[in-house]
Length: 187
Image (cartoon, rainbow, N blue to C red):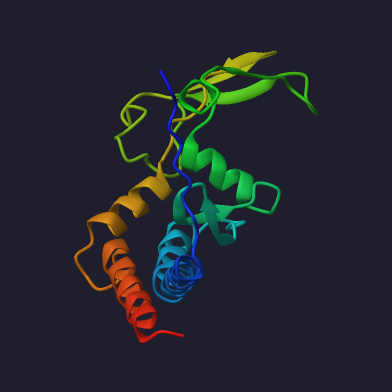
């Protein structure tokens, strides 16, 4: 069976229109969406000893005109801590396996069971607050990890469901309207 290939030409008008759309989306996200997303993330970590810094990146990927991401660098202070809390660790985290813990500056590990975290994960308690705690001593443990708190996912869902003027869809709609007005106005 013969193969039919269709070559799509990119006219200067099409390339100009794509560039205008990218510029308006970038402007809308940088000025309206990003500051609010960053503020919501910062509010989640305001009481941390080392709160992470958040960064916005914009990219073109394949057929997608625009991708907006809020990132945190794991190498910076607080970044790795946010990564662990947000995505979980051990069996509950991205690697789905336990991790070994051995004593470094002491002959044994000393900890209490049940462990009571300082913050409560969104899916409820990991422990019974009425249980009596016991002191444990071990030479080695394979830690199961902690549940992800899904901070970014919860904030993202709020932006996607928002009906106010700063929701993702509203900001995107305004950016497209500005872009189409510029395209229609001509060079």
